[in-house]
Amino acid sequence: MEMYLRCAVHDAPCKWHRWLPMAEFWYNSRFHSSLNCTSFKALYAKEANLGAMPAWPNDEHAGDDMDWAVHTEHIRAQLERAQLRFKKQADRNRIERQFQVGEQVLLKLQPYAQRSVASRPCAKLAFKFYGPYTVLEKIGLMAYKLELPPASKVHPVFHVSQLKPFMPDYTPVYAELPHVPDLSVSSAAPMQLLERRMMKRGNATIV
Image (cartoon, rainbow, N blue to C red):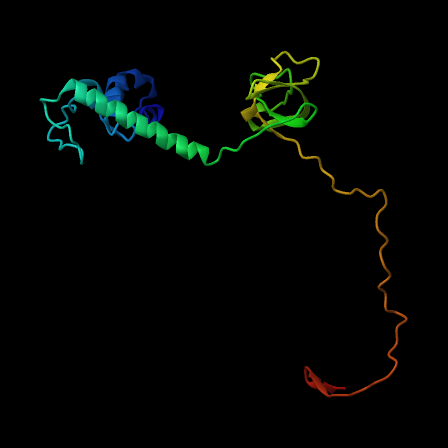
């Protein structure tokens, strides 16, 4: 809706309210894959009057003499199929996470609303995860209580989707820099000449 209004009122942004009825009609007359029809047809059981507009392909319930019970059941079945499709797509990237009491985790914060836990000057470009914080208790199956800083003013129980394991950095750090080996060859001299050959460098011939 915002994108439509942005394109429509580019020349006269102060008159955006005049485009609201047209924007609503445009949205309700567009095909939605979740409904397998337009929003207008889902509500009124027929397409909006857009002139000579053919029925959508594979539409089994086209026509003005539509049975409302059949139409409602068709919409409900289509929404259930869409929900299953969305769930299947979301489960592809979902992983099972479980934490133990005493384990350290990173917490995903909302910089604008949870400033008492971690405050950053540029909240929009700040890091998403903060911590690590220690797990104090497991609440139910999907929530954990964390040991937050004493000055924090947010509830210490978070959903497991807001947590991820903390991986300590075990990269070795040395206190002293390595010694640079002596690669100078000023005192080196050949021990024996095994072969000679002639080379041309420019216009001169050298051995």
